[in-house]
Image (cartoon, rainbow, N blue to C red; front, side, top):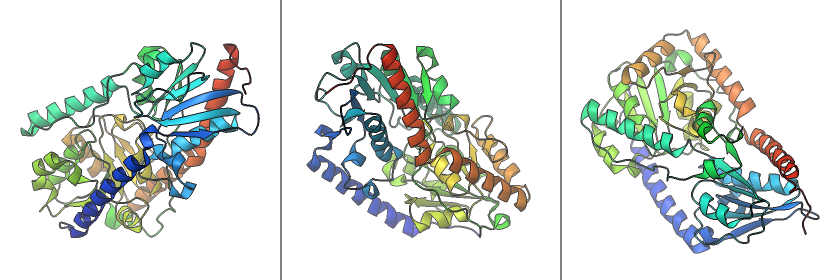
Length: 409
């Protein structure tokens, strides 16, 4: 079956744009960037924690109202609750806060990149400072993207500007300990700092049932690309070029293409009018539409140049898709249930996709089930909460070793 341009995808994209505008307006009206969400333990606090991340989930009326569009909404809440359950009083602020910390007598400080140096300089020397790293180090993240943009220019003459570069910071150098959501790739980008690094596996909001009705013979040549904006960074250009040269294979693109007009214009010839490439636009992974699309495919292709945990890959694996990914996608992929691209060239993608599709349907089903089984064991909200609570307990031991384990009122 050949796919043509999908009008429903455009309607969903327009709806998504309106939703984002309304969401931003609501956030400004609620002054989220300036608010402080506080959690207190049941009795006397063993210490105070400043948590600077994404507090929208903590402001939600109920856990069911927490947005699922990114893992950090739920994870911030889980992190705060882990500290509270270990006896800490927690003040949580949004990472874009421009004002000073709510107070200065904190015993533990957890933050991503933007405010780390500024806040760390204001807090007491006894405060244990934790850098929560949800991306690779900025020099790797940015350098890899710039390299991809240069390769695109050399390959096709297309000139695009960088998109969402990570701001330069010294969080890794300033912190006492680092928490990393990605795998060995991401962890190695911080090795230069010589600090203790603890991995806490990225969560995932959904644990879909395995698609028992999937026809692996019919879907063996159909693949999904799933991701947010930063399309060159995430290798969509490579995937499009690869499948454009493989007319017998199909690629379904699920991503908010309208949010990068320059990319959309540059690749319009591949996104529209190709019988084997279907641009769906943004797709809600909570909906039946995503599950139907995933059920029609054998695998997902994601040749990203740098990730902090590869959340879209994990979502695809939860939906029973076989991952064909770069090492830099920062997901643990074994040959029993996926393929790690040796490099990320157009030819590498074609070879990997062709080799996977050539396998017998029963082998593909076995790999898909193995991917689904592995991700359900390693990347869930329950696993994240367990690992982060263990991390918090380790911080308590570090504080005690430094003489900072006193109870506080």
